[in-house]
Image: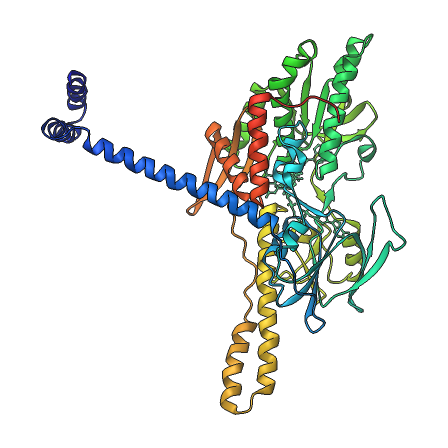
Length: 531
Ligand code: FAD
Ligand code: NAD
């Protein structure tokens, strides 16, 4: 009671309005049964927690059940329906595949990898924070839940013949059968083959650098990283050689380079210091960026925050410095336009300087020299139809639009195209009904429906914000807020970053696996064995 009175006194000195409220509350507390409101609040909390827990358990079990029970007898392909061939199994294609109505079309999917990869968490796999298998979703886990049969071919599309409306596919995997090349006819072709890592033709990048785009890139980086460390521990190594082997260089200060450097830093601080105490202090991380600052797409205060956080983490950033050549053990860099060239020795080199078009896209561009004049991707109209064609659509990083090449854009484009195809189906149906109409009145009614279906809305992108992990459990976020932008950075943003990515993971299975990996890392640390 005394303590309550003391609180009341302090409150009354500080704020007269609060005083009345506290007094009323105090009086009530004394007069009636004191704990009653508290008890009912506790009851509410318990009920909410119980409902939440039941919901979570229920959803998890439903997720498991759904996952283990694909469609038993999917309806086979119907020759009377049109065929949509989708190229790729990345963000754009998987999003389209999930949303497309297979009752309306026969769907075929062609991709050299038989899975979807959740790229935003790929940098975490380079140091073992997350297991690579937790980020992939086999494409058949999606297609086999469709009511109609979807054909999946693990192959690379090497050519498109827009006149004959056929594509050529090749089995590029290690094991090949007697048939390794084939052709597939299409009514609509959707290209979602993404892009490949950019080298700008710089000598030595392909040979000595590691990209960070695919599953095998992350695996290669992890292997090489541990190899550098173990080699540095080999007896008789000179101090200069140890310094070189333990110098990890990242080229490109875009989000890929930043996130990789951040993950590497965490691995060094949280794990390597324990298991390689004699070497960990000698590991150096350097990020090389040609522009005056890193993360040009983020707001100024977040760029400054990232650069100062990197400084605290002892990650050196060399801005206005372009890599001109890559050699087996050193890179040649140039500061500014006319600066002196300098050699920087390295042990591991991660190359993250953005995207360039894949060979198939270049081939298609060459077929339409007048219409396809943008080098960074296939030009499309506002409905994502490839310029120069009526039945080829392009989405994601393979397309050249006004949007940045991101997963967000690709996923929204895939979903949008599923709606376009549903509407195109309606158009055809109403056209046939208009033809068959017996009276003028009926014809006018069908015409109105047809016109409505023909009014297909152009693609509209809704930006949900940009996130980037910067190390030491800190992230940055540029979020759309009203007419402006909300920039935030720090540990709370890191919690938001994690929850945003968990909620964006494609399946309940992936969510479960990633949460397990994070928990495993928190308790046991990361695995340091070389794969
Ligand atoms: P992809 O996802 O690259 O998929 C392309 C698909 O096409 C693949 O399945 C590939 O195997 C297949 N393919 C390739 N060639 C052929 C062929 N000839 N025939 C048939 N199939 C083919 N974006 C964000 O918005 N947020 C992020 O946090 C984010 N983090 C990222 C982190 C990393 C490390 C990287 C590399 C990228 C990140 N991105 C992020 C960008 C995002 O991953 C891409 O913009 C997105 O993957 C583009 O989707 P897509 O479907 O166009 O291509
Ligand atoms: P990027 O194009 O965003 O950045 C590449 C950087 O490399 C540029 O800043 C460029 O100036 C620099 N560069 C180019 N050549 C160089 C050279 N010779 N020497 C030194 N620096 C050089 O590439 P990215 O980071 O791979 O991202 C690709 C796309 O994926 C972007 O659209 C990005 O937004 C998206 N992405 C997003 C996230 C995220 O949101 N967290 C993460 C990764 C990628």
